[in-house]
Image 1 (cartoon, rainbow, N blue to C red):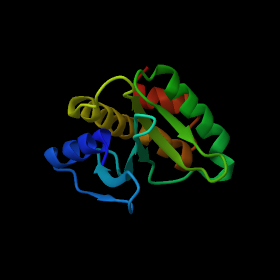
Image 2: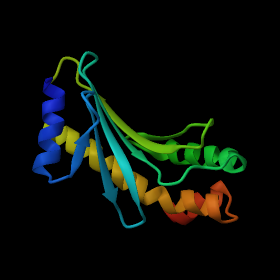
Image 3: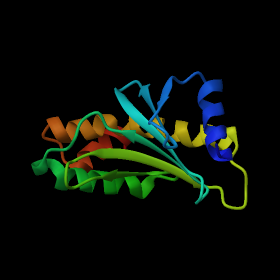
Amino acid sequence: MGQILETVLKFFSDDEWPFSRLGERPILRTGFAGDNGEWTCYAQVQEEQERFIFYSVCPVKAPEEKRPAMAEFLTRVNYGLVIGNFEMDFSDGEIRSKTSADFEGDRASVAVIKNLVYANVLTMDLYLPGIMSILYGDVSPAQAITQVEGK
């Protein structure tokens, strides 16, 4: 087992996050319940590249007719994000938040893993109402940003 995966496992254990490992691959599956919803998360380690990637997968997918509006909303969100980004798969409408780190030339630490994981889930929780208002309401991407960020 590599150093990055050991560090990720230590974070999840120390922070009491329930998780399961996806077979022999260095991918962990967990969940998060925020103020605005619940969703599945994946922690992926790429030891050879010395990378850690954490994903929050939105609990709903964007239907085809809503994908252009969702793409605009996510682009507006990404413009202001300091850590991580949102992405959407145009082929199936999956929306996810991603944070990552490249540890080349350094050691992964529990503190960095913790910061990336919490930045990720709190960002998904913050913007989930905007995502839902676009998918289920008649709200424009600009209106959804204003509702979420209060600008």
